Length: 281
Image (cartoon, rainbow, N blue to C red; front, side, top):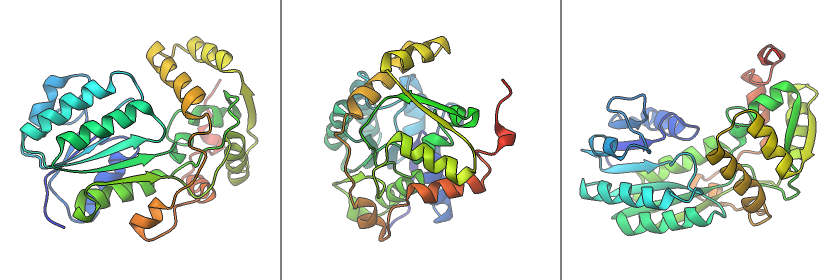
């Protein structure tokens, strides 16, 4: 391992902030957080902000928002990685998605642009249930979701970030693609049942048709581009193509991946799903 100047795009997101914290704990002090709120600011939607943030950097963690699945992601990643290479970035670690055609295109773009690269594919995050889109319905005690029957190997963001840190710091991971999953397959209903049991709360689970779900989100003024992404993820990515588990987390970290029950127990300890956090209707 060597001293590096590392840019973490999505540096305040689920994996980015964890990667930053773990790098700091490892004594890596030359870290730049890529975020609209930082100085200099970084914004995926503002290519003019990229050069200042990339200048002087030799390693980049690429965590694209909102998702590599969107149709424009490949063109954005191509422009970003091309600029990064011209400015002297040597290593790129990409957070990719399992079973997403656009994400695969972005992986190939990174491989072409970077002198050294690692690809970290991840399934749906555990933390979507306490830090993301599924928190509010859990707090409300009524979890409505499209009626997807295929199970998902939900993966913990701490496991993902631990793998990313290893890829950033250790050259033995150069040229490797890791397919990260949790150790078990769970349907959304089974995941909510575990959360209800761990938190001691009653949470009604209601699967509904995708069209009805989309209409519900539209009534909450969810933007159309987000609606497209949600439909894509639930109708295509969650079609069973990712209903398998791997041991890549153990391969990289030398330990088992965290189970969903371990995640739920830790979230309960943090008080995330306590009644005091239930919003007033």
